Each structure stands twice: as C-alpha cells, then as structure tokens.
Length: 392
Image 1: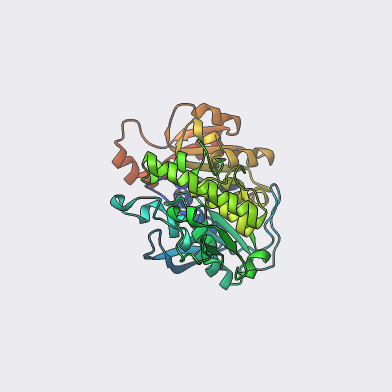
Image 2: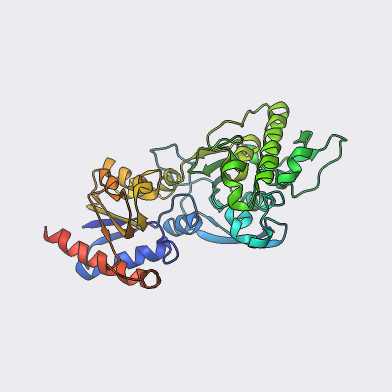
C-alpha cells in the first residue's frame, strides 16, 4: 500500500515536516510495510521555504539583508533539490537545469520584524526582499518562487526594485537613496533602469499570492492592509496617493499598467513592483507548491492521500491548501482524508474534495494543551483512522 502524506503546518504547534513525521508514526504502527511518501506542503505563505526545501531534499541558505526599517536581518531561504523549468499549472517539472530558489518576502520585509511601537508603513521598505532575490541570482538561480505574505511594507516594491539596480529620480533629477518606502513614492518623478540587473530578464519569477487586490483604491494595498501595519486613516490616504502616483510613473516610463491587475496590491504593492520590474507571474500559492513538489507525479500508484492543517472551516475552500491538495488527488482518483486541529463553521464544504475529515483534538482540550500536544494527537488520530480505514 502506498500513502502520500501531504499536510500543511499546524499553526503555532507543528511545521509541515513535523506533521508528516507524526502522521507517519501513526500509520507505521498499523501498516509497518506501507510505502509512505512524506511530502510537507504549504500554500505560499509562512512555511513555504521549509516545506519546499524539505519536500524536494533541497538545501537551506541564509543571507543578511536590510530589514523593513533598514536594520540587518538574517533571512532564511532555500534551493530546491529537484530542478527543471517552472511548469505551467497542471504539469510537473523535469530534471536538469539551473536550481530553483524559494524565498519568503516576510523573512526580509515581514511585519514581525518591526516592533509594534515602530509600525508605520510610510517608513518600511522592501529593499531586503530585493537583496534576497540578488542573493539567489548569485547562486546561479534562474527560477525563483517568491511567497509574498506577511509584509510590513506599502512601498509598491520600490525598495525591492532599488536592490536590483533601479534608480528613482526626483523632480530635480536627484537620485533618491536606497530604501525607498511608502513616503518616498510621491517623490519619484522618473525611473532609470540603465543599471538594472540584467540577470532578471533571464529569470522566471513566480509569485505565490492568494489575494486579488488591485494596487490602489478602496480594495487596494493601502486601504485594505495598511491599518494592519500601523497606518492611520491619514497615512492610508497618503499611501494610496503615493501608490497611484508610482503606478502612473511606471506606466509612462516602463510602458506597463499594473494598477488594476489582480494581486498587484499584495504585500503593500510588492506584487505590482514584481510585475513591472521583473516580469513576474502571479499564481495561487498552493498551485505553485503542488507543481514544485511534483504532487501529481507522487500520487501515481497511491492508494490514499492524508493531508491536514490547524483548522478546517469555510475559508479552507478559498484557495487554501486542503482545497488544492484535495482537488489534485481527486483528479488523480486518489481518496483524500484530512486530519485537522479544529473544525469550524462551513467545514463540511471541504467534503467536495475530501472523502472525510477528522478533528485530532479530544473534546474539551484547552487550547494551550492542544497546541503543545499536537504531535501526539496527530499520531494517535492517524493510527486510529488507518486502522478503521483498512478494516472497512
């Protein structure tokens, strides 16, 4: 019997790799001779680097870059162990070719890197994210998967572009200093790409993004996400005007209209910046991860897929991991069961792609205990489930 184990992380308790190991222990207790393919997953947000590097037997890297406020940050990223062209949706990569890097912008420009009392998206920059991209290029990478969740920034990706060689000039022709931030955007009068890193043009950059917000307006980067980053209503207005101005300069100087592209407003407009300066493609994170770990290929000959995450509710079917993994397995004719930490309203919608789901947490368990004993509960649930599944 072959079982593919493909869970997400269990937030605040288990990484995806740890969840794989716990499930595997439970299965081994009942099926010691089963073939278990442990494939830690992610949906493009936090944990994507860990999941992809682990699932492909890749290597972790660490690079010191500028944090959101310019302070040094040791950012962790990875090189995938399986290489080949970045595939279109529904296909898998082949062997050979330059390595693929996986990055999380949050490792360089994330909100947790800014103390609460200093959070102000007028002052934060994506410079470090651009430096992370350059570090990957220096390793010979020509394919980059970049997760852009959890940002502290609303600079439209201007700081990132500077790190890659873009120069921004003000109305007097003066070059603005590196570290462009939200309040810098209104000063940009012209874009100079004469020193832009030429390796970008030969690099495929795939952006993992699960939101479809445009750059500006009531659903834009500033209005929707600015308050989460410390923006007052006045700061939101200033940021939105700055992003609109930046979009106009990009359209004039680069010939690219990024203002209303779905996902352009992600990560404080970093989506727009990556589209404009790097020719990036934006795709749902779970689709990128499914392709990168070759899940479809790993499902060949499988009898069962076990997935899981911290909570199953109606949002789980809105581009989240369980929905993506479930659909992929169903297309392959492989039954899927989800082991989850808790079950919320609307969870039954997941039965459209799952054969069943099981809450691993015993009723009445206090949350701190549920988190601290998640591995134990997950192992026990996997053991109980597989015993009943094989019997039936």
